[in-house]
Length: 453
Picture 1 (cartoon, rainbow, N blue to C red):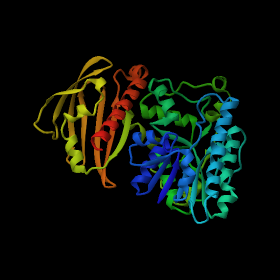
Picture 2: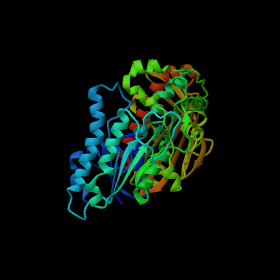
Picture 3: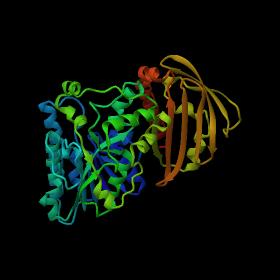
Picture 4: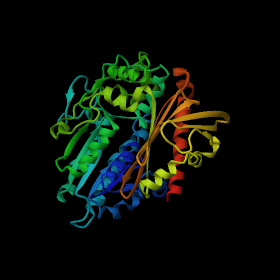
């Protein structure tokens, strides 16, 4: 099917676009900078501008609408609140109007629109399902008006368009969202509950959320309100204990409610509200969560307490050609940013194989560093794994996999690393190293795109 995806360059949108593409759908992303998005995107997805969406809708089977101003960034001034509301309500209205303007028989058969569990407001210990009443507060009002644009739209109903409003909980992902802010504090040993930690948190692992949205594309029974939350909500105290345990750090320093309200004003309600939400529709549909418990979610996100970085990239060439390139250790120099001054100095075998040792020299922010890697696993045409024997990290474990996909090869990198000096190293260098790793793989993606054009 042909899917139009707004918010395609966001954290959720990028993952969803990759999932839909790998499932064989044609994905059309919407972006303010279509050319830039296509250059940066790891999959061969075409982008259009927001102004072009109306012309493209006539040939689209499904619309997934994720676009919206971030809620939890900065104080809720009058201007910010207007931007948050308008980006969701007016943005959705414009999309619906564009669909309604199409000739009969043209346009999407379904619209899947994001919403949020903020609809339920602060509800204490009350168990909440899709049929529960709306709560009070700014977010509840925004979610109500946002959903009404699709759920109660006569323009969509008259055309027989299936509509789903997916109320999303706290999304857990290593790339962004709540964990991007919390993890550095917890790694430094400064994490803890908010207040007494009794408020309920309804969360969802990003991979499960992507699976829910992808299922909504083809499952016509997914209609109306759908709560996208894990089946096991936790209190804030349980959440912080589980996160601390996953990272191997204590989590006992509380953040007083009064201090949060003073620092963030009305926006503090995002973290102070108690919402015990159940995914009743998904359970009735038999949806299987990959990460139903908070412990399983954190184990995937922080395996063994390590930092994790995952990247994917598709190239329009066969595995044989792609793997041959990566089989030459010297080619790693071409894939590494010049500012690292990276070069291979020795290799223990004539060709890469199991147990091969490879020595490199590089510079990290001007400081010369020696690095020795060992090939832990070598499966030609499928994968290889290298780990640091000596070098700047306490641990570095890099898994490279190669998978045939859509007439080309999907390259996947999964890096697990740990900084020296424990909590002190995380506090001093954690953020900078994460940015460095991200920049290295950004350069790598650009270079691979150039080499395998």
